Image 1 (cartoon, rainbow, N blue to C red):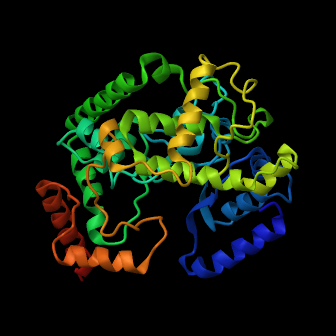
Image 2 (cartoon, rainbow, N blue to C red):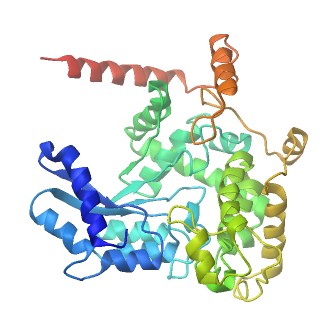
Length: 405
């Protein structure tokens, strides 16, 4: 919100539900994603939002101040580097950094690696958002990803361990609808406890995945393909999330993540559907972008010559933009035969029904999914026996502690 009165009202509504606790450990400014929001949040005005939150902190009502974001890489880095926050909720995944992927970090790189590194230097808490869904839809991994990671750990366990071991994040978010959805996270925690052994497993899996990407994309593109691309917040892009689209192309071409890439591209198509040639860039941006999902899909009518002039291979970038739009645009379906031919098959599906999580529910499909499970027709695979045993042991210990007098 931009108005302090609205902010205070929202705080009071939330505080009334938890004030019996005496304090809130963590308070986040949610989804600071564009420059106006950043400037409004960081304003030094005595009647500003940050001053109000610092007052709450001084009163002991909150202990730590942080933020979450779906912004581009440069804005995220600036927020971290401001030194105003105790922690960050951020997308930083092995397979790419969601809306920050392919956007400049202001230091010559792209994505959120620099922001996470700076946050750790400032002793901030680093919380990884959605490593299993936005980090690659790894509860339904592609065959290429599952094969490259290998049998020692599941793709979900790999995502958590990569965040903890390689990125040095402190924790990650886990969405679950039933206790069994935690099995793979418990598997990751059990491996993490093995220290150097876990680090070697992750390092080896990351190398195999990197080698696969280099083989599919070429060394030059793998190293430089997402660099020197302007953010979707810059007018020269006309709102097109160029880096985001090219990142989706990478995920599909290198790793065969068909469903994940379709989810990501469809998010961009919503803004394109509302974009009007009769409005200015700023008017369109205000109307069509929201803090949680900025940028729009590829538009053949937009001249991107200026936007791509600093890219190492503008012609190849344009070719890939046209390809990903052709593959992923609404109404286009990739057949099972095409997936098999291109090596884009799904490995397995850990969800109890196809529509969970984050998708449109249909009663008939949910009921059929549940019936298939009841009849033993579930085609998915589960975690290893060792992980199941670890999960069972942990839950038993938790239950014993929670029932102790």
